[in-house]
Amino acid sequence: MIENNPTNVSAAFEILLEEVETEIDFIDRIGAKAFEGRDLGKAKEALERAGVIIAFRDRLAAMRKEWDDLAAAEEAQEDEETRKERRTLGRLRRGLRTREDKFYRPILQVLVSMGGSGKVAEVLERVGEEMKGTLRDMDHQPLGSSPDLPRWRNTAQWARNLMVKEGLLKADSPRGIWQITDQGRALLK
Image: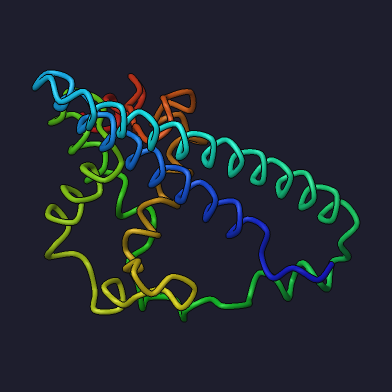
């Protein structure tokens, strides 16, 4: 297998899809405001723009599925030496960045304070505030693969994926929304 890390690509697709969903929500609010103000030209423009972005999102989701299928097929054929090499590529030395599990409690606390769910961008903004004293210098550095994304936001996204697997966050929440589960609430107590 030639890919560096198919799991990172899947996570990147997920992050991108959530950001596109945030953009759709923004356009939806603009369109609703225009419609309320009876600016039908602007409302129509927002509707058309939303349609284009929704079509893009659907193509992106299909690409993610295609990638996941390709990665699963390749992973089944990968030898142990390649797996071992993959695990060590692109990793920081232990201790340079904040670990995913350190994000659990702040994410859960933020979601509870938001009534149990929230849009990704807003949740991450609040988590960043909660963790100001915890985050290290390396956490604020941009990722090599995404210069506009601070490392801590990427780590928080990975933490979210782990929390879903552990049953702390809902797996079936709408795209772009994080929701706490009863198990997540119990962990806080």
